Image (tube, rainbow, N blue to C red; front, side, top):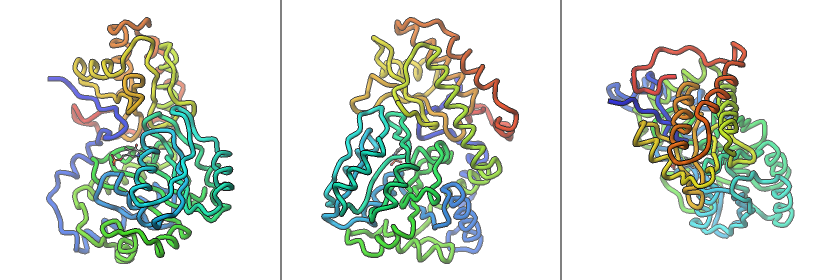
Length: 397
Ligand SMILES: *Cc1c(COP(=O)(O)O)cnc(C)c1O
């Protein structure tokens, strides 16, 4: 029997309170009891997304909300600027193309963040652009984009800014309304500490105006139906009741800690993880690293597919490898949601041991030491809030 540790950028481990909520008897979604809960969930989601606008909940993985953004905001033939730089940015490009948009790519090398000036230039060149699509955290490269600056640029034009914050929400700072992000998309299985299965989207008034007129076909993802139902704390179709009940528990945990403190913890763990990686003599893949996931370049001669598999097989610790062209060259460690400092120490110990076995030259313990010295420096108020003790195997901190 071996304890399992999950440190991937989705799905992420579930707190015991969320796990328990998933096992409760189901209730009916057209009841006063459910509406009260759904209203509370709506308020919690608004706090997490940092908006006063409705946050629509779909039963789908995160990509469903990406599709929802495209089909509600664009009409066939509309020009869409898509900021590239990773596998998820490329998904925006592909969804836009599937709905008949004229995609104008803004090229960005893997591992780099977009230079906001590129966005300004692209908008100047294409003043008729309807929308700019970006990722907050590009999970495949571990890069976080400077959405605050990008939003200040897009805001001054007629275009809307659409952001995939599926992994960035609750890991990287994102002031959706204050910065002027027009459509924010997220999912349940990353910072929100839930199983996969829910997706979220919130629109600004500027984006709602587009959604009223867009000519793309849409039915399940038609945001107008959700907005209408939300006025009665309701959903147009059957809600994923058990996941929403679990979301209610997750939001209670997040709001009890406070969104700021939650983000500060991710930042601390990200910093400590980066320090560990440097102390091992390895390089970060991301030039502008996210607080949700650390992508590490493979040391010379090491195939990260082998590294990740070995750590999985031998130690029951799940890390992520590289996607697409980055397969074999990058491995990724998540530090979002319920992943805690001591989960990361376990993961880093496995990385050190396995790298040595795969022939890399490093002396085990250097990374752990650097990680611990960063964690040890934390002022008391920024430390993780104490929680009910987790059962063995539930990803205890
Ligand atoms: C995980 C992730 C997605 C994919 O969402 P699914 O839930 O698999 O549909 C999209 N974008 C980013 C940035 C992600 O991290």
